Amino acid sequence: MITSVIWPAIAKSLVAGTMLVQMQFLPYDPANWYWEVGGNASRVYSSARAAYVSRNDPAFVEWSKNGGVPTKIKSEAELREVFTQQYPAGWSGEAIKQRARAALAASDSIILGMYENDMKVPPNWRKYRAVLRAIVNGEPATELPPQPPVPPGI
Image (cartoon, rainbow, N blue to C red; front, top):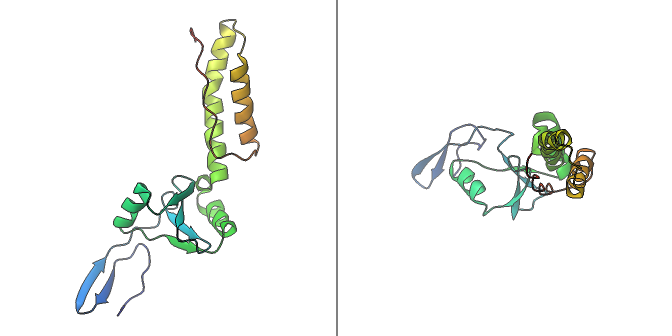
């Protein structure tokens, strides 16, 4: 018989037969939380990874062992709203854009080095940066393109 309501971030007591069990629930952290979306119990959405993961995912299993209980939410639209208000980087579209911006910024110094050494920017670098800019501008993507090798002397 359950004698109290289960709620994240609060230690609760449960009565299982005649045995009293203490359960510690993790405090809610939108940057490291999981959601079960639309009743699909086979996977959960991870804000830390900004992606769906299997319930067998090692990080999810460890989080669960530490008292984490995924929040059930009706739809991706509702989940997006949660991220809009609480943690924009947790939604995959925003997370990939932030990573693309960071990769563009990191590649700026490489491109500058090419110019300073009177080198022509190779086609693979032009394409790489064009793909990153497209992602920043809203092109759907799930991962960034691999960075081309840095030319010798840069």
